Image (cartoon, rainbow, N blue to C red; front, side):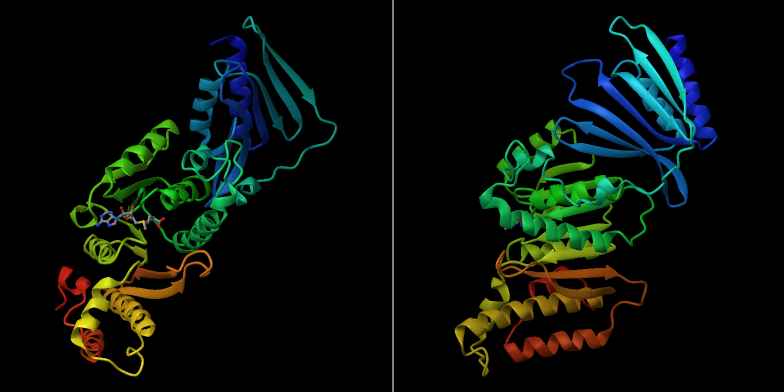
Length: 388
Ligand SMILES: C[S@@+](CC[C@H](N)C(=O)[O-])C[C@H]1O[C@@H](n2cnc3c(N)ncnc32)[C@H](O)[C@@H]1O
């Protein structure tokens, strides 16, 4: 390492030690074709800890990573002069610039400020955006143009993705995780919501994640894993498996959105068995209970009308799911996922694991009453769990 680079890095470390760093920029890529255009560094306070937020500006996306002081210096050592030929360190009272010529000659220039600058330790406002359509995976998944503009026929889907991200953020943000967050997204399909989840958790909430998209269709799994690899996304992988055969060793959050019919039950059972802290599912086609109700021949004033039988079957299926979650100690909410105009499958069941004593027998009674009233011999989810 050249003497000037060493000297420059020691300026950085002094500034960090004295807490006088306002911001820093790295620019002028050493390789013209480098996709990484520049880096912007600023100090931030996260959970009372002083860290350094590095915003990596790539050709078509931004990525933010937070480092402590030692990690920051390691990254700078990697970047100067191999990736960038200019660096400016803005301290409270001076600008210190490093210039590297094309022949590798290094110069340091220091300019004292007339007035002291203020530091702003707030988290970067740029991160206020939940999902950034300019990220390359949205193009690769077919939602945007190459320039990151959402295509006309994907506007609805994107609204759904955004709403989902808002809900998931409100659920996950208050939770405490002691390290990597293990998540399974069961019946992940084309991956839109799985990528949204990964983007939200890693880029906005700065969490370390291990997200598995569980999907039965091998063609989708192959395609999505290629996108993940191309974008070098850490902590995201699609696994070819049926939901009932997938038994994660560690699971903090279980997601199952629009997994068909009883696949939702398989997912809920897997979440309960693995002791997931949070279970979020948007059920889909409720055939099992409807068929039982039809077979029983029991009709009441509501279910004698075909369309209401259908709707009642949906409500009973999901009510029993919610009750079973409660029975296993999950405080359960049923909420609207997204307005009907975007998808008719708009109910979200959210179970949060509580410390309270599970297995309240009055819940079993409520389930039994519902089943008797509607001629249901069993709810598929009951058979998957130890209900006594
Ligand atoms: C309607 S899509 C939903 C995709 C995504 N979760 C969403 O909401 O946009 C349901 C996906 O679940 C997959 N699937 C259905 N049953 C499954 C099962 N038992 N095991 C694994 N995947 C399943 C289907 O192949 C399909 O891709």
